[in-house]
Length: 432
Image (cartoon, rainbow, N blue to C red):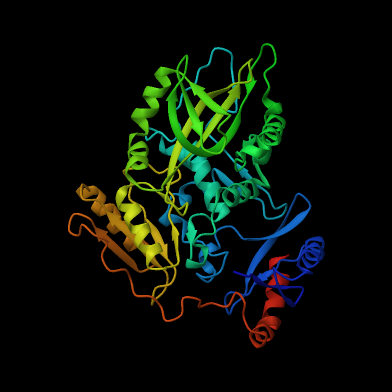
């Protein structure tokens, strides 16, 4: 969807040829662009990343945008994002960057083996609020890349090439432990046998920064990819990456047993949900023979359309939403423990306004029921609940609004003229 903004008192679309020039000029004057998705324009800020300019929403302002605006974000308290935003994730609206505080290591001391406990449900509440786990780091990048958002026009348009490009784009402007996240991240290219040598050369160049030296701590990198399978190797096990058949990540038998136990749900879902994608995020280092050794790992399941899900019930709800051609944002858990209730998704095209969707598992405890009720009571959004113990199939979803394209991200010239005067005063106030 095209974004429409007021920059320097002039309406402009992000598809206009002069858009970058307008952002450059406004960035130099420290003016804030205004999003025109609402009758009352919404201040945003300009970030400069690798020589290009981007319009970004102000912290905690996502829910103020129109649901059909690309800058809309459900209230953070409905997902795990609210638990880490402002603590583990800090946006700098002046410089345009984002700092991520993480709870995993990017170095390996001599004698320290792989631990493979990322995303453990034993994480403390305090560490959850202040540091991202591996799983929550992947959730954050998935969110930033927009892959937890769905509209019918996205059908058939997501491939690994697209996923990789947007994940790398989402890493731009982010720092982690004082380093640029993009410099720490390896995401395999889409595999093509005829280009195998060139792909390997580019991978070797990317991994050259963690080639081990004699003595001292070894540097680690992050890898995000799709797990094709886990196989036994000569001295243990190895993770086969779908888009990097000539590059595996190795680990011991003991680590394999811990992975199987910790991620039994994910491996089971991979077996039972057709065409699903088993994504992983891992920290790894290189040994003296340039083989990749696992340090920590976490897995996240995605549907065939690359939408994350955690349980068979969530997969069924997402499938229903997609098949009924609805617009929605899938909630992500981040660091919140698996037993804690959250909104599964927020529906963007329902009659009244955006609607929070909840699932109550058949095995839910009384405490879980109370948690759902408390979330619903404290939220300003209407809610819909699927109680799996009462209805085996997904119940009827909230009615579709007559126009699922309400909102005016591409608003009319007359509307832009009407808001220009008040918008200019807002822009001046926001930039001071």
